[in-house]
Image 1 (cartoon, rainbow, N blue to C red):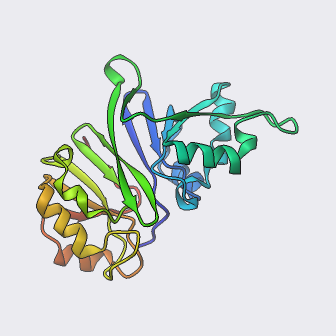
Image 2 (cartoon, one colour):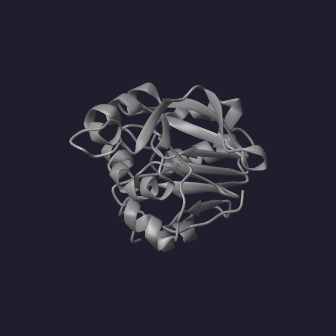
Image 3 (tube, rainbow, N blue to C red):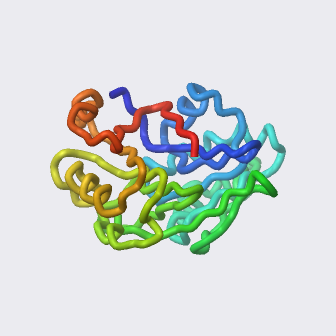
Length: 224
């Protein structure tokens, strides 16, 4: 139940793709012994997903080149405005990242380490968030968009990593009942509930949830 803000990393050989740079990203990288980042993909522009961007500076020092970051137009433009010193030379600070606008499908990495992504835009309260589909897995960390139950691209996945904030209904996140409804419609082999709020106790969830629905926790690793 000691939970930091949402981030994840996809590792395929030397290809290390970070999903979001949470405000806790420095401690997350250190505690999980992550020593390389090839690129970063963003779900959306909110502070709990983006405010750790400047913590990537040590990787710029290590590689001596800018790190490519990817997101929708709104996210990249927001970051370029709010954290402009990371994108262009200001007061002697070297820029450390390069912003890239995501198309619906794209790939990152080379040869056998390449990972192919499909994206869908999902409702997240008054804004939108990108859901990423890769390696028979979908990552949907911030959404309250129940229309995903009808999306064929999300059917029969091996893993569905899904937002589940609270027991009570929320204006921009799925609650537990909604997450279980989505699991029942999409029928992945396993659903991992993420973005859990304080009222969702880990041990209590284990007792109540179906065997193919698992509460996520910091440091959780899965083989895709």
